[in-house]
Image (cartoon, rainbow, N blue to C red):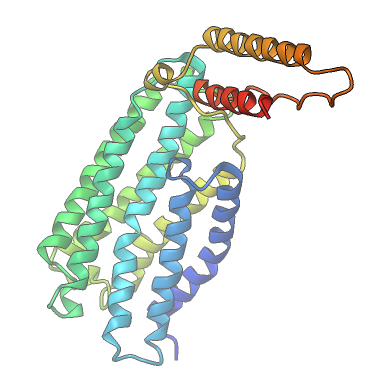
Length: 316
């Protein structure tokens, strides 16, 4: 017979299957790169489906310790993708400010905070997979505690970045403000989820134990928060438009300006036309027409490659 906690696992399976497909759709639409953000909600949905699937597996195998460990690992891993997904949302808002005003915050700030979250996730996994204590002990190893501490640092830093975005609210492009609202609301809700992890790790109270604690508290402080955050972000993402990549100062130094690019394009086209004219002067009237030249596109390196290819083909 299915108990209360196993019923929650069934609920999460039902909730995260459509969330996974919506996150995949957003990935196909906006890209699967980490900077796009939807990549992390795909990982989170998979972690919840796998973890709860393992926990439901304990119905038929209640003595299989590996199923409980897999469930605990997937549960602790969840914080990192959520925080990284929210950071990616803030990074997109920052890109919007850069496109509109040209004076956004350094993108490396978001990457550094995200790196802290990744380290926290690794520590949590290591602590829970190498811990020799019983499941009822709540996996309070030093690695897990360090991981939770880093998650706290990540959340605080993310809140700070969110506040910075609000100071630049007027500089956000039309249609992107809703994403900042979604991230802000999600940050507040995620605090409750983080608080549950803090209490379960640092407070020796059976109420917050992952396996034998109060299931209603687990539902109210953990499960519902994650579901709400995921759906707020994904549903908001469905309303966002595709945007061009923001160009920062560091990127501008590696790329020619528009005027310089136009000038270089003109120069390459002039050279190509001269070569074509020379080839036509040498070619007899009865010979076949010369092979058409490749079009110049992309950056200067691409132009150079195309120029060389055109020159080689012109000699054939």
